[in-house]
Image (cartoon, rainbow over all chains, first blue to last red; front, top):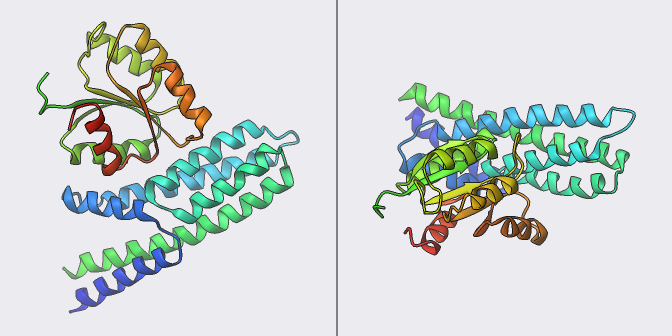
Length: 145
Length: 130
């Protein structure tokens, strides 16, 4: 009974992530691959890789923007990498933040990049928190069964 | 080559993209070999004895930005070996100049990341592998 309630809670949590734009259809694609391939943990693996990528990349971008002379080409490459990583997991809000970043590094606008990074980090931290709640619910369901 | 046994070379340096693409390809029943940069891809194709023919692979998927050798250069070098295997670029850079650069290098097609079941289905059908 507890497991059923937790599953309902998990489904509602994921639905709310879609409704709030945290996730897009790519996340459903991952869920289908997990279910069809009988690969428990596949979604968690991809989300984990995304979180590791995003933590590392946002740190590297912050370091570049802190230099006296900013290497905007490197900023470009890193944002590009994070955009791809977020697209792979369906982290839509992070992906959109990466796209918004583009105009600032193209214009070599350091202040704009600093602001865009702050927005990107906010979106990432919110997304990460939602994913962590999702994993906690999954672990609780597993413990019940 | 046996049509039921489709072999793909996946050229991708980032783990998250390899993990997702591998799952998509395996779900479609495709055998996958993976390398992490363009130079490894060129070596793998050369060692597969692919010169002048379709070689050991039915299809090659390649990323653009990679260490050691990028996807453009790998595509050029594979074509220079006389390899006719279809090469499909998979990249987050999907503006027309990005696509054209890959086509100019010798790629047959382009699809934006991430690879999905639907995109793979279209690609396999396009190259007679469905």
